[in-house]
Picture 1 (cartoon, rainbow, N blue to C red):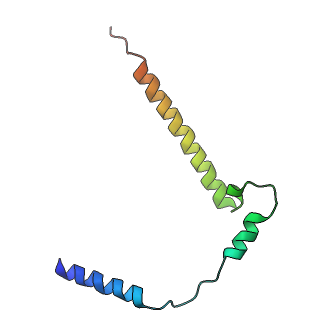
Picture 2: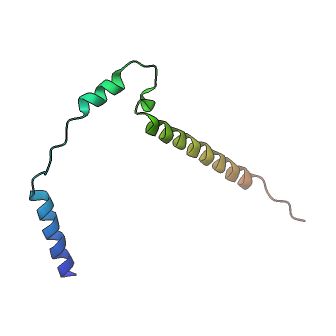
Picture 3: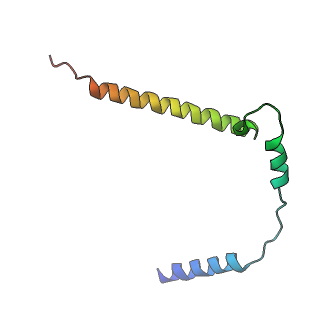
Length: 83
């Protein structure tokens, strides 16, 4: 176990103290232009197809979850008949 801790310490020290190999470009102005343009889309869909898919998936899961909760509540509220 001590050996694992030493390896972890070595890896963490190396990644923190090393310099970046390449600089990432600043994409904030590009995203600001994209989200601030007036094209009639709501802000949660301006990111493109990926945002639309995530939105629809979230809404679908929300509807399914609400339906499941309602089904369970109705099942718990209505007693079963004993024959």
